[in-house]
Image 1 (cartoon, rainbow, N blue to C red):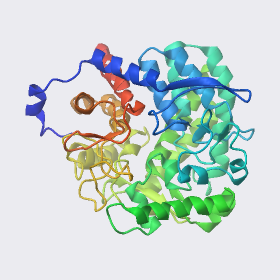
Image 2: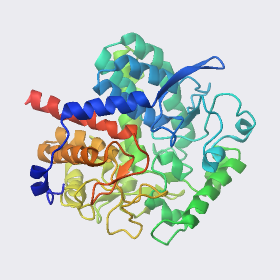
Image 3: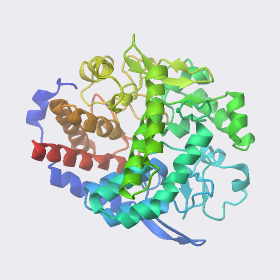
Image 4: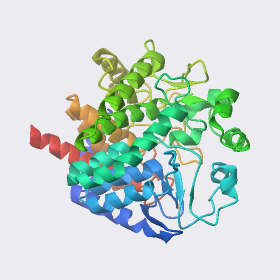
Length: 441
């Protein structure tokens, strides 16, 4: 992590843990909404007022991590139940649940519906897309904070159907790696590693990139989100490093939930996790660059762009320690391309597409709290306590300076994007992790 700002750290006031927790609680409750419509009960938190008005899949899971860290376990349960309220019989759950506000906010949202759902916008419905499948970890976190076995037994059948749908429908090649079919499914819209596949070679994002991504969604829409047809066309078939890392973690969480419930399926999920881990190392890892790259196409071609997810797979236990040390040492600790006052940038600073400022085209340079949250747990587990502390302190400084924003300039700490943005509340979980680590020492 960067130490270039250490002198500044001793001179500036940083919000206390209690002040940050109070702020995160206020943001969550300000954005919370509940009700009943067409026999569905919903209870969720908007990621931000106005900008993101729907219930989003991985956003809801992030809210659960923050809520449980704040001691709001019952509220976290309501969020999880709402997320699976409209689950299809085959197990699918979309990346957006449209509850109170039914009409999509953007044209991209409209194209992310199945064609027949466009004609039924008057009632609650889901999008046709996915987001990173972090629901099992969120459910396990609720259990860890509540020891509520009845909650696990009620939710587990739905989770089994959901992860079963993923394995049947998105592991096209049987290698354990899930594919996304549009940039929006990664949760990291406009991620620069997708530019080569989109045939966008202008570096900094502009209107042409918007239309190229829109064409991908239009292509999927016109095919009626027929997955075999979409795969055959090979227009946008990407195995994202972060998406698949999260998939492994959640297969392992599924095994833990099965064990808690006294069910025998746990071994099945562990076997799936092992297969995916092996494929991540085999296909995504690039020894020369010491990086895990996203893959595209039927031939698993590497997308050689250094986004902030090139080191995500180091958190997986089966990744050799030597590989983990090389990746972390080169990119996160020595910061080859990631040397900034406020880590972790979403794109290496020397990549042509890097833009640290506010933009429609996000995830192309600014710092998001979720990257720091994701890596901090691993760093603590592996004994990198100083680096874990620095990641947390960086987030505290960002929130002190700019509030709970969607993302931040990695050089100045200036906040950009949505205001009162709930993801930044993950700092509460980071605070608790560090305190728990101290208590165990």
